[in-house]
Amino acid sequence: MSTVKITSVVEKDREGDFLLKWEVSPDQEGDIDIYSSLTDSSLTSFTPLTSKKITDQVLRVSPTGSGLREYFILRTAGVYSGVVANRIIEMNNIKNFRDIGGYFTADNRQIKWGEIYRSANLSDATLYDQERIRRLNIKTVIDFRSERTAKKYPLLLHPSIRKISLPLSPMDAEKLDEQLRDEQFDRSDAIRYVQESYVDIVENHKEQFGEMFDILTNDSNYPILLTESLGKDGVGLASYFILHALGVPHSTLEDDYMISNREIDPAKAKIDAQNLSEPLQEAVTAMLSVNRAYLNYVIDHIKQKYGSVDNYLEKELRVTSGKKNLLRKYLLYQF
Image (cartoon, rainbow, N blue to C red):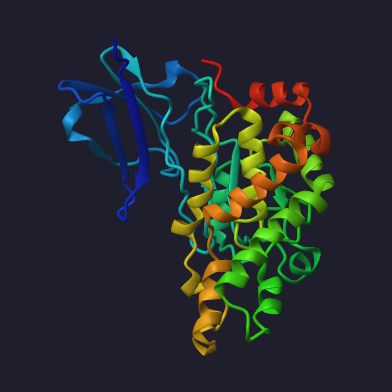
């Protein structure tokens, strides 16, 4: 007997409308009911929006409320989707700003939207961006940038938001500049450099990751924003560990990590790459991008040295079963 499954995503189009897209498997005819809400606090907040044919596969919805977030649930054949919302939050000057909620764990629980966000550099935030962050009710910002970079480029945030510095010294602008002084540096060098930098982060910044999990196990700190220069390396590893601790499968974590390639344009980086040699330009692109080989290299390192990611989290970062239970309590939908 086959089980019906609804897969759905929400994106914002250039006009600012929500595009709700869905697939139902196995393929079938019929209607799909769509419910919407401005909050995901309870199922009773969702009200019927419309019904569409399953084969339509897309619905454009004009935003109501703030226009920042809207939540949807879909139903067909007596089966409900999870809560669906837009992952990417559009900003003026802040790149790679997104929600790490909405994913499903291996035991089919769903992570709440709007509790943990991740982003690139906040130091260029416009007043518009700062207002959007405030409207997302973010209470705590964890800044993974190096102390040198953080001092040079201070965060622009509403004073009510708590800022916590946990320097991971990942591939920020200063590190990139250092590498580009070597004219022999090429793409393969860049890939090895990033891979080894990831290993350096997980081996030499356990205290910072452990402190991050302490912050995450205090529910008064939510919603939380994780940030760094590019929002892809230290933030990428932090997001991986958080979602892994909640039980999200590795394949989903890989996909989340790779979203940075859609949100970061190496051509718009603050580097005059046109004056560099072609091998150096390729190296710049490799360092400003994400690659499954970067992530899997460090995860393989963790597994070889510690036996499993869970062992690393528990023995090195102090993520006990009690902390995992608290994370699941705070970050998984209870309905």
